[in-house]
Amino acid sequence: MKIYTIGGYSEVGKNMTAIEVGGEIIIIDMGLYLPPLLNYEEGDPRDLDTKQLMKIGAIPNDQVLDGKRNKVKAITFGHCHLDHIGAAPYLAPHYNCDLIGTRYTLEILKTLLDDKKIKLDNRLRVLNCNSKFKVNDNFTIEFINMTHSTLQVVLIAVHTKEGIVLYANDFKFDNHPVIGKKPDYDRLIELGKTGVKALILDSLNSKEEMKTPSEKVAKELLKDVLLGVNNKGKGVVVTTFASHIARLKTIVELGRSMNRKVVLLGRSMLKYVGAAANINLITFDKDIELVGYRDLIKKKLQKIDKNKGDYLIVCTGNQGEPEAVLSRMAKGEFPFNFTSDDNVIFSCRTIPTAETERNRAILEKRLKSKGVRLFKNIHVSGHASREDHRDLINMTKPKHLFPAHGDISMITGMVDLASEMGYKLGKNVHILGDNRDITV
Image (tube, rainbow, N blue to C red):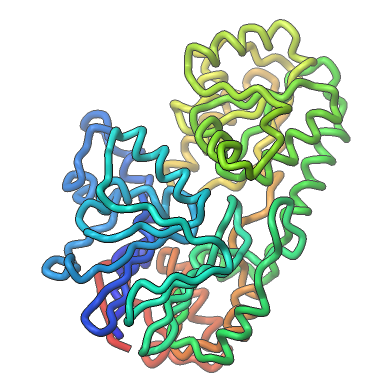
C-alpha cells in the first residue's frame, strides 16, 4: 500500500490524500488553502486558473499523480468545508471517476461549481452516513457518522486487501450534538478489532490537553450572552461560520426568545443554509429572513437601522474578511450605524494565520471606536483535542499513524501523544509534509 500525502500535511487546509493498492488509487479530499488567496495582490484571485492557483499554493499540487491519473478510481470527501472540497472544481477534471460524498457535502460542492460556472463530467455519487460502497475489488469506501462543525460529517474507512485506512480529518467527539447523531463509537471499536493499518488524524488541537466541549456548551454560552445581557433597544449582531448550521440553529432559537426578527446576511449564509433547507436537513429557515446579495443587504440594513431593537442580525465576517458583511458595516459601506453599547458577538475562534489575525484586529478596532460592546470566543471548537485523539487511537489501534491537518508545531503535538502511547517516530508515526509518498 502506498499513501500519497499531497496536501494538508504542512498546513491547516489544502487537504488531499491518495491511497494506492494493486495499481489503483483512491483520492480523499481536494481542499483549498485560503491565505495565498487573501495575500494575492496581482489582481482578483477569482480570475486565477488551476495552474496559477497551484503555483501560489492555494490548491494542492497533484503532479505527484502524473502518469497515474487513469488509475484513480474514485474521489471521496469527508465533509463540505472549503479546505476539503474547495479545490475539487479545479482538480476533479484531471480524473475520470466518481466524486463520492454525503448529500449535504455534494450539495455544497454543486454551489461551488455553479459559482465558477464549471460543469464536471464526473458523476456525483451520494453515500449516506454509516454506509458502504464497493468501488472495485481493491477498494470499498465506508462512511462512519461523526460530529464536527457542519452537517453530515463522516470519517472515511477505505477497506483494501492490504488493510483499512481510516481518514479522520476533521472531527470531534460530541455526545450532545445540536443537530444529528453522536459519533458511531461502536463501529470505530469494531474497526479496531478488525485491524486498522493506517490512521490519518486531524492534528489541529493536538496540544490542547482536554476533551473538546460539546456544541451544547456553545449553546449555553450564547444563551448567557444573548439572554443575560441588557441589550434592549440596542443593535445585536452575531457572526459565525456560515457552514456551522447547528450554531445558526441555536442563534435563531435564541433570537425568537428575544422577540427579535432574525435576519441572516451574506452570500455564504445563503449558500450553506440554503443548501441545508433544499434537502430538508433544517426547518429554521422558515423562521428567518435570508439575504445574500449586496444590494438587497443594503436595503435590509437600511430598514433594520431604523429599529435596531426589533432585529437580531447574523452575518458573515467572523474572521474580519474585508469584503464580508460585518467589515462593510463597520467601515460604513453598508447603511448601518453602530452606536454606543450595540452588541457584536463573535461566535467563533480566530483562525491562527497572520492574515486573519490582522484582519480581525482591524475590524475590532473599528467596532470599539464606535463604542460597541464585543463578546469574543463565544464558541467551542469543531476539532478534537489531545484526549479525544487518545480515545480514537485507543479505539482503532492503528499500526501506522499519519498526523495531518496542521503545521509542524501542531503535528509535533500529535507525535508527542503517539510517543506516550508507545508509537515511534519514523517506525510507525510518519511526518512527511506535502507532496510525498510512503509505502506501508
